[in-house]
Amino acid sequence: MLPFANNRDVRKIETDHPWPAAAPAQSIYELLTDIAARHPARPAVTFQLFSDPDAKAETLDWQSLRAEVTQLANLFARLGIGPEDAVAFVLPNSTETVLTLLAGMVAGVVVPINPLLEPDQIASILRETQARLVVTLAPFPKTDLAQKTAAAVAMAPEVETVVEVDLLRYLTGIKRVIVPLLRPKVKVTHQARLLSLRAEMAGEAADCLRHPDQGRDRIAACFHTGGTTGMPKVAQHSYSGMIYNGWVGHSLLFTETDTVLCPLPLFHVFASHVILMGGLCSGAHTVFPTPQGYRGAGVFDNFWKLVERWQVTFLITVPTALAVLMQRPVNADISSVKTAFSGSAPLPLELFRRFEGATGVSLVEGYGLTEATCLVSCNPVEGEKKVGSVGIPFPHCNVIILKDTPEGLTECAIDEIGEICVASPGVTEQGIYKDAIKSAALMYEGQYLRTGDLGRFDADGYLWITGRAKDLINRGGHNIDPAIIEEALATHPSVAMVAAIGQPDPIAGELPCAYVELVEGADVTVDALMKHARIHVTERAAAPKYVEILPELPKTAVGKTFKPALRKLAIARVLDASLAEAGFAARVVSVRDDIKFGLIVCLNSNIDEEEAKISQVMDRFSLKWEYRAEPQLISELLTK
Image (cartoon, rainbow, N blue to C red; front, side, top):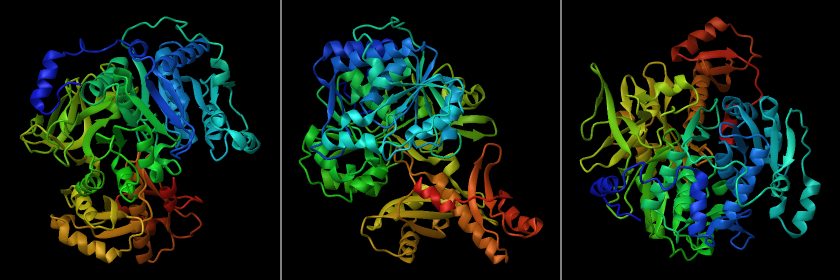
């Protein structure tokens, strides 16, 4: 690895290893072939279906991984996939997910899709990418993924083939006999043919590709952004951008002797581009525990024992997962661990202290985003780690902070907050999104990605994320950073996680409120948390006007707190109270996303009350509304 302790080291790396000359390969297949030649017998990827530390696991070495990726890429080519054709997958983690991700990039353009999305959202991605082939699970007990994907494919007429992955092969003994009897029936109503991935792969060559690798840069992946509501946007990733991420991982973080525990999903760039690509460049071994990763049954309870089993040297985590881990004892030998890397969301200072105190492991916080093919910055492993910052930008990644002025966009001074903008090999010249209009709106001077994140640089060149522009709480024209509230409440010993948002107010526009997830077994009142906030929130106007304790904060599939769901809860709560105060029987049954209007409040339609009078209440909040009969309640957002 290259020395990486400060900005001087970054400048030296840029001088000694100019990009793109430093790129280890021109394509993913070239990269895979090279690493298989250098470390053929070293472990590449491991997957275990169950979280028990003694559970059966499957490991592929680099030579075997290259052979199976070659077979699957040849299958895709036989099914008509060329370099510009999309291969989508709707899968949890598995060995086949790794193979599909890599083979999809080799043969065409891979499109990973979050299996937690609804059928209409999956279909939207399939249509936007014009996917011709979809890989998903065969019917399996306790999952409706085959049914959801079938419904999505029926809404995406360009899909010609569905290739199924059967998890049955991971089972042994009595389970292997019983599971086929429990398979759910799936009514196929779509136009695509059904094939079995393993059966079709078996007849393909494993030593060379049907169509020789072109060895040139091109768009080879489309990753969607967004959480679990609305229609996700699709970002384009090139070979060079993905290989850049892997090069950074190898140069600064991993070697072939490292073992990385990665309980994050492969449809997300963190697992795919940082960890797996880092392995492809370095030869590091990546372990994927359970199909659902951190969400898998028993993963948190067995986490430290899994670390001991695989002699893990590098942990990959996110703040919400750390909060849960800190409620479990460190009940195994974790002396092999050198570093833990946290990303996806800002790390609360109190959580950082708890983790390092409990484990003795150095924790590195980093920053990246899907639109930039992931990596932007991190605290240097060998240098000063400023807790709360996301470190210094990686080599060949230029970050500037911009603010709006009467003269237009202007670069901010040291410690001045503005919008973070990124230019790097991961920001593609072809455009960020497949939608050219959306893509153009994100660019500054044709090369910088406008991230929408707010931040500042300190005098030492460390980047600090201060929030999302859209997350700021606007109280009567005064912007409040939710992190002020979150950091204050997180210092309470009973609090595991906090999310602060703005709740609607007819006078101030928004007032700060907070939702809290408690440490397991904790017993604390809302009044006690309100008092704690009043004492510890440094800005008087930021003290929350409302605090609610939830069993669990809503989260995205990668463990990021999902604030849109909390905003909908707050809207429903405030509007219900206002309607009741005005004497109306109507209540909010849901708050739905709308492409044109953003959010629309839906009131129960069986209430016979004058719309004009109700409008007088609703219009005070500047929200669109409609009568609508919907069976689900807003609280269901927390269970998605």
